[in-house]
Length: 272
Figure (cartoon, rainbow, N blue to C red):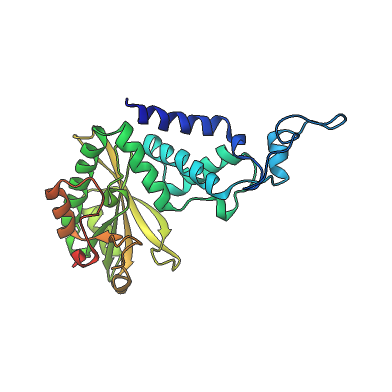
């Protein structure tokens, strides 16, 4: 492990063990005697979580950075989803204090931390796992071709590893036909709901496990069922111009290019 890797891991572990280090005076002010750990005669000692309940001065940017660091490690090592990892990281950093919105990192910041972590600690295993997951995703997109499947999530953006699930979205007039297709293929699935990509309520999602010899473990595949009309609003890109979902042709191109840097080599017009 190189020195950068050691420092990255040490930072994440220190943050998790000693989150009180985030507390401090407002920017530009000097730390007073009592804040430095000494208290005047007659004053009671106040514990960290008690202090947090009184809303001490926290640097929002620093809190965001540390939550992103811990969340990235949880995602890369334990396979947690972004939302769960963010909540767990916030609890580790802030204890029982409710995290203010300005203290929480967005998914793009966490994604960058994941890439840094994987480059340091999973440089060999992660690209291989990503390649395998994309091949499995492509296989299932071809099976589901009549339902207009699209790939999204970590397998698309390039941060997937052996713990990651495959997320597909299909666009069809009759969602029941997808369920019937899976049953006819002998696939036992679970039914749940996931958030509509445009924030319009929930959509039914069919999830099943699939064994892949290359990864030597079962992969979970989630197929979110959208109406054909939803496809009109699906061709959006993120803030960096990267597509949020891609079709079979684009996945084929990613695999052929051997790209492990997400969909950076794709643009929104590659979806068609």
